[in-house]
Image (cartoon, rainbow, N blue to C red):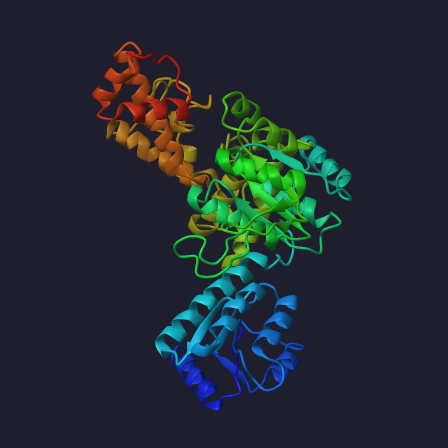
Amino acid sequence: MKPIWIVDDDASIRWVLEKALARENLETRSFPNARDALAAFETDTPQVLVSDIRMPGESGIDLLQAVKARHPGLPVIIITAFSDLDSAVSSFQGGAFDYLAKPFDIDKAVSLIRRALEESLREASVEAAPAETPEILGVAPAMQEVFRAIGRLSQSNVTVLITGESGTGKELVASALHKHSPRARQPFIALNTAAIPKDLLESELFGHERGAFTGAQAMRRGRFEQAEGGTLFLDEIGDMPFDLQTRLLRVLSDGHFYRVGGHQPVKANVRVIAATHQNLEQRVRDGLFREDLYHRLNVIRLRLPSLRERSEDIPLLARHFLVQSAHQLGVEPKRMSEGAMRFLSGLELPGNVRQLENLCNWITVMAPGQTVEIKDLPRDLTQAPPAGALPAAAPAPDGSSPLPGLLAAPPSPDGWIGLLELQAASMLSAGQFEVMGTLGKQFESVLIKAALKHTHGRKNDAAMRLGIGRNTITRKIVELGIDGAREE
């Protein structure tokens, strides 16, 4: 972590802050004027800058403007006297993180600097580009089509929609599209829209102004601003809330957006690549996804094949992941026997490449010898279920199996709770995300359908039997796409 720079012509202020931050194990570097600090920026940068507003020569405002022009994401805290609060307030227009009014409480000063430090580290983690884009491996014809598509799009800024099952490598393809595009030297920012609560997603995308909502103690840039000049990858776009779809459409249409709580438009020069495992056409028909946004995103569609469609790539991928996992752990790579590799190539692997990578990590840690046999693989892969162990289940609301992979699990002595535990474990080991949300929706759908069947489709009666309100069951029926309900 870089040091915190303190710029103040008052030596006592510098000394107090240096000692207080040293007690927090935070490194500092001090300057008596803005000129020396600006000269230091030629060879180094701080994690946070703390500057007095009135100093001989250049003022703190001059320093703020110069720094923000070169380092827009650097948090700057302005120190001011109570009599000069007007200047402090005007400094926010230049992008100051916050201000300290003299005389200040040292504990509050340290707390504010720590908050700025957290913001700086968060910005750095988002903006830091990977040293090298991970390889996309594959010799199967289906993957060769993907490679050809990436090549054709290499000099284009066109919007791309990537579709495919979870775990097929959509973010890797998006990263490759960026790496081989004219924007390659600019940031590549990825955001999983399904992994962020609805209330926070708008701020995450578009940023917010200071005071826009409770807890917004400083202006924050959103992902669109962080990706300026580069590429913004929006994963699981099909799960984006409907009202935010409207805001995204506006950005794609006219290239401008407003921060949350802001009144000045911000121009966005960003290439958008979106991805989803869902059927967007069906979501449009169901009224869950805007048709105009769908057409804006669906300029070029790139479908990634599942691992079932490229099983000949499994040995290549498995060897790569075994070497990669061994390198990370500092051990010798494990080798798959010919029989184990044949067995592995014949598995369904519903979690696709992500599940295969997780499996190779497991093998590196858990397999006893250097050469891995079939008996060394996880038991849930090698033990076939008894015939007819589980009954067939009705499809889930999205048309998929209600508990994918559950039919491949052995029967549990704990009844349906044991089966639920097995399914959760299967999804987690496959590297899936949002497991609680997925299983929760399926659980609710099964209960509501059973209650509606029992009450011959009467919603009010079904709600009473389930112990929920009439409005709740109506909303759930719409959200889950359940048919067969009727009014009393």
